[in-house]
Image 1 (cartoon, rainbow, N blue to C red):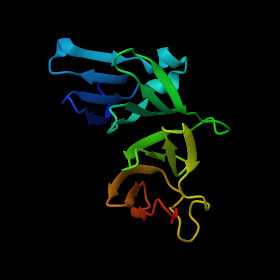
Image 2: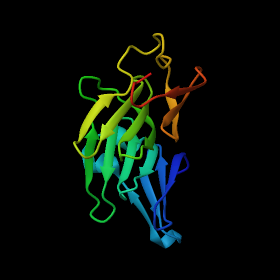
Image 3: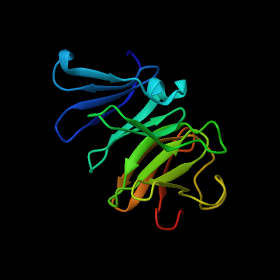
Image 4: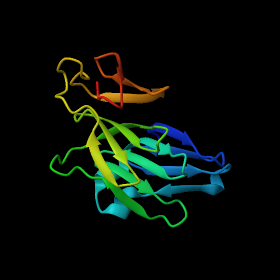
Amino acid sequence: HDYVYDVAIAQDGSIWAATVGGGLTHVRGTPERMQRFDLAGATGDARHNDVFAVLVSAAGHVWAGTRGGLLRVDPASGEVRQAAAPGTDDNLVVTTLAEDPAGRLWMGTLEDGVLVFDPATWSLAQANPAPLGSAGQLPALPQLRLAFLGERLLVGTWGGGLNRLDPQTGQ
């Protein structure tokens, strides 16, 4: 697909590409060894083929941030599992992913701030519990990039600059 939003390099050197409209593409050296993962077909939800973020965790799991939430993809079996579903908000759009040293996944979203997903407990929580835009909190803007700098999470926003978030305090 022509619209690649994100790429991730796996421990074996293969490349995962997040595409809009085409799900995930896994490239292992040559075009003959390229595999497309139709996430919409696997979940029955067309929004999952709009993938904005891909992450290969330290544990080797492949995670996809989509227009319909967070998915885990098993490359060997092709199994796709919904990890973080929209729940009461039917429009959870995951735009970026980062993994902390504990293996938790931090998700930047289009409208729901920063969320944290713990694969060990399969649970989802708001990273910054106070309302977005309030004093000491992230701006109420799309969260477009996440990266860890030591123990602090850097949050790049659309129109709100670069912010730091302490994962322990949510501030």
